[in-house]
Image (cartoon, rainbow, N blue to C red; front, side):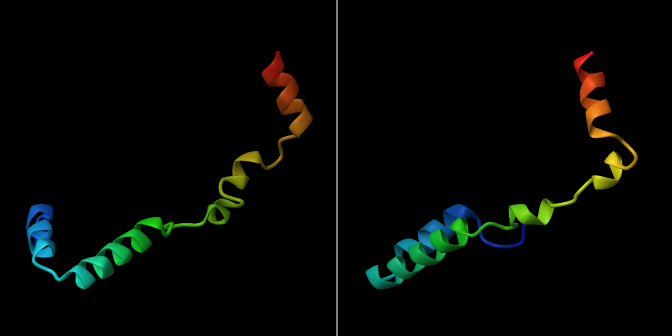
Length: 65
């Protein structure tokens, strides 16, 4: 359930900022948008238990058949 302002309300509020404040807001928003929430390296080893006791070559041969 949303409790904060809507996007339209934020846009309206931003239109009342000084040019310098708008620049600052734009920089803050673009910086935040470009930061990844997670690093790809966090996935390393995920699901490795699925492959326990499975020979890689036997698996590939079975898939090819």
